[in-house]
Image (tube, rainbow, N blue to C red; front, side, top):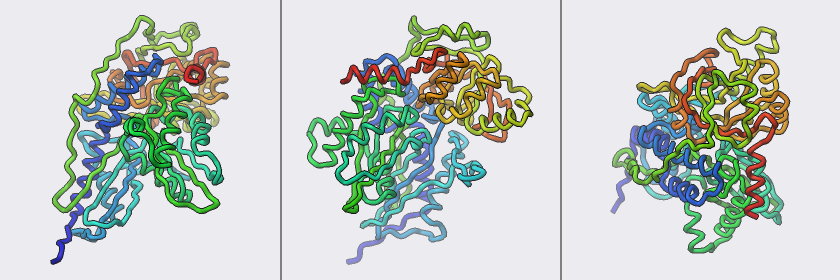
Length: 505
């Protein structure tokens, strides 16, 4: 008796990819929401607790509004396992091409357009492909007659913090993670997961680390039943050591730095121990589905009751700031760790805009008409395009560290008063902020839709050809930020974790 081979339609895979990417753009996995809610309940650091609250509120808002969790809607990574018994209805497209077509449709969906972040010619012109293709696809031929897909949208801020090492066979992996994690700063938007690949070769370890992040958060179940394998024991050890570092949510210091540790391993050469660590940020986005020839995947929306009921209120110690009238004397009163609500006009700019500004200043041409940073704040952001009656799409901060190379120039030559972004600033930048009596404010990474609701007006003022990297003028109302580096150079990303590391020890 012969077993009928299923026929998988190309259209079903393409539609499923497009639907999955839309789905994960606004739905966090339930296991992630549960882990964040648990972290919120036990957090004792006020700054970290507020950051987690913003992430959870943003998550619920995104689920309700079906708009992106984060303005960085990621580079698509897809693991496709094709059963040896599978037949396709057509042979004119490769699996890579089918996945890319699904990506193209998802990212250009007019009801929920996703930010295109992929640039071609990465060592040269770095021109945006405009549809977020190509994606990164890993294909594996496996027994069976189904197609299994695990797909994720990985933000650049967390991807950029990936670490790789070739350890000696006798070296301690947990000790390497404990030493390395603080060097990653807060640009990966903790708390999140760490995916660790061990063994194989260098590239195999990296793929395993990425694939491990597709698994659900289950560290607490492992703690309850106890470790049985080497990998499980290592997961628990790294989890404990990582959280005792006190890095905390958004790097501000606190009890929870990682929500889970994921490990995949493979046999390796006797002389080698390759290890790759890749973090997942607070915009953890992935979903799994399978195709068996009966149609496209069906993704069941979560229930809004899965999200905890959390609200934020402006406390008595929160200071409202008018950006249109703020003075040098005002900002010199702000202290590291203070919470502010920003009102008024700010300009935006990130990597490409800063590079162009640098070229204009150094050439003597000067800034374009309508761009004046004197006494102003710049917000490091590349927003999602708006839909409907939105002023702007999700507009959370990008990693400020990437702008460090331009900061001294901006403070010295443009009259800039302060900056807004996410994550820490480097030592030289902190010194420049101190020298110029400027200030660096931190918005919460992973709360992009929440932040966008504070933006009441938006217009492009320069470099329109740069798309999401253009210079915008935003008019904001009660946009929440924390003073990360004050005018005296006191750095919350150093003082907060240092204090909580001592407490936890």
